[in-house]
Each structure stands twice: as C-alpha cells, then as structure tokens.
Length: 306
Image 1 (tube, rainbow, N blue to C red):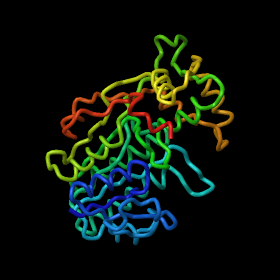
Image 2 (spheres, rainbow, N blue to C red; image 1 turned 90 degrees about the vertical axis):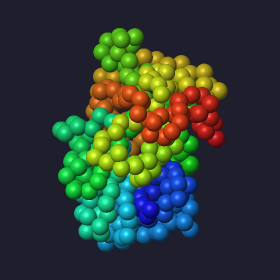
Image 3 (cartoon, rainbow, N blue to C red; image 1 turned 180 degrees about the vertical axis):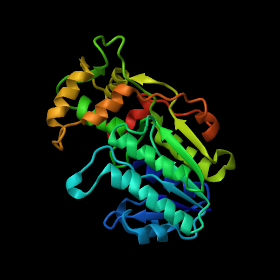
C-alpha cells in the first residue's frame, strides 16, 4: 500500500517510515525544505517538499495513497515563528482530511494524545477538535492516544531525553512533583510507551480493518510515578540523583511568571496536564503489536548515555 505520512522526519515519524517499509508499504512523505537530510530511507519514499500550511503540497502527498497518517504535534508554541497548536494540531489536520477525501484516500490514522478533551489546555483542545474532524470525515479512521513516548531519539527530542537534560544532568537536585500536600499520596503517574511499539500499532492500523472507527489508547507495561521515572533515567546514565519533593502548585506559580522564556523547562499548561495524570491500561497493546511491549527500564534507556 502507498501510505502518506505527514510528520515523517520527527521522532515518531522516523520510526513510522522504518516500520512501513519493513512491512512492504511505500511511504509518500511531506518534508519541509531544508529537512531533507532528516528523512530516513528517502530513496524508498515518494517525497514532496512543502509545508503543512500548503494545500498543494498536502494534496500531492495524498495523491494515489491508500491511507494517510497524520503525525505532527508540538508541546510548546513559538508564536514569533508561527508555530501554534491551532495551526499544526487542528488546521493542518483539517487540510489533510480534505485532501484525503479529494484524492480518494480510504483510511486516515491520527496521532492524538492521552487526556485530550474539549475546553482543556490549548494542546488538549486542538487535539480533541482534530479528532472530531477525523471522526466526521466519512473516511475509515483510527485515532491513537498514546501516553508519553520514549526511545532512541535519533537526534530529535523525546520524553526521557528531555527529562535527563532538564532534571538529571544539571548538578543540582531534581524535582519530584506531586499533587496536594503529601508526596506519598499525591504521585503523578504516566505509562511510558516505546516508540517501536507505537510505530507497530500504526502499521497494524493501516492493514487491519478491525481497527477502523476506533480510538485506541497506547500505554506501556507499567504506570510509573514522576519520581520513579527520574530514578530510572538517572540509573541508566550511572548517576545517583537527589530528588526533592515539590508540590506541583509551587512550580505552576513559577511558570506563571517565567514560562514565556524559551529556556524555562515547562509551561503552565504542561504542568496542568501533568497534574491530571497520563496513565493507560495496556491490555490491547500486546495484541496490536504481536509481542510484549517494551518496558521503561534502565536497559531500554541506555540510549541516554550517548
């Protein structure tokens, strides 16, 4: 099958391209000018150069495709350069859905996120509205909502790498966020899922009609607290790290004053979503990918040493 991939040069996208080719599919990819060197297996892809804001480039990427995967998302806006949740997580999805219908594409697979909701943070709300566009498209659709995704970033940024950079590597204690007043009862939990498992689930959705018209949450084999994840990241890098508990409300106060600065590690909205939790039961994932999901262990975090 020819599968259009929007977001092929990013962290998850690079693994999607790998998995599609390995499974015998031909990716048709949209690549921004100047990012051609980030595309893996370029000789085995049909490449269109352009932006997600270009209806023409999107239409060319969708041409003669059997399925489209939309895999673009951001965690932080950069309004000075026109990078916003509205443009990349909603408007571009709507543009791709229209192009898919116009080009006779049958299937649309969307990368969403666990915890999206109408009227939530701008990140959550634009993801939710994008889901609604896809669900009402008249196409065969599948929507994936992963928890945090980890794995070798291949020069990009990913969850564990960012935690290492911001929390573990600096020569100061790390912060163990918690809700409420007591760290032992206010833990913040996530279900880290490996990027290879996510990519495999997407390829399964391309091929399997039983996954049509489903919203599927993706989580790894464990739900871990923020402190547990920091501890494992430090151990993977052969570091001993002092972790100081801090109510997340205190960090929100600091973020309300400083999150407009590019170097401040988190935004108020990111802290709001962190406090809501991000856990997923993983009963479906082993069946989807045909193997035991990869756990968030020191062995599987060894890429952080490089």
